[in-house]
Image (cartoon, rainbow, N blue to C red; front, side):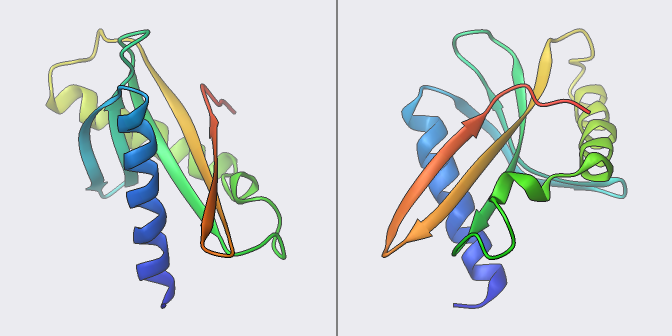
Length: 119
């Protein structure tokens, strides 16, 4: 499986995980000049808009998946999230950035959800 297909497999797993927790998936792969947001969802518990970065790995040879989300990536997510909020007339909504970390091991996925990450 090539890298792009592997990433898509991880995103599908993240969608199923969030949907299973009751999240409404609002958008996938939202792309702007400033960057891309993998998943945009609404958290049913807090009613916050969640801008989720999905990181998928085969193993930890390059560290934990969530460690790949650095300050520069977070800044791009913030800028792109603000554009989405403006487009949808949702500027006054509460929102946050989450990371969905997925590690595949022998065909099984370990999913970790890190909520409300910041710089």
